[in-house]
Image (cartoon, rainbow, N blue to C red; front, top):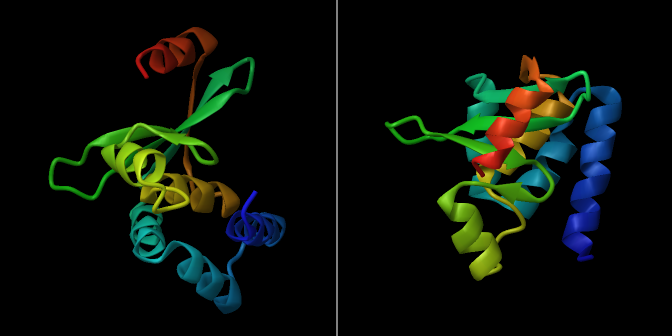
Length: 132
C-alpha cells in the first residue's frame, strides 16, 4: 500500500471520529487528491451523495451525482470502485489518481454523516448491484 493511501486513511479515520474537518485535514486531502477533492466537496455541499442501504442486511452502496449538466448519477464503493468514466480511465488504466471525485464525495459525506439516507429491500439493492 502506498504512503499516500496510508496518509489518506489516517485522515479519513480522524474525520470519522470527530465528524468534522480541520484546516490541516483539508490541506492534506487537497494535497493528496487535488482538483478531485475540490470537486468532491462541491458535490457534498450540494447534497449529492445518497447512501442506499439494503434491509435487513445493512449492506450499502453510494449513488453520487456528477457535475455535468446532464446530472448523471454514479454508483460507487468509496474505497474501491466507481462506475464513472474517470475511474476506469484515470485510475484503473493510467494509474494517475488514487480515486475519482465520486469516491471522494462518498467518503467525505459518509465521514461527516452528510449522506441522504435511502432504505431499500435487500432484493432491490441486489437488483441495483446486478446492473453494475
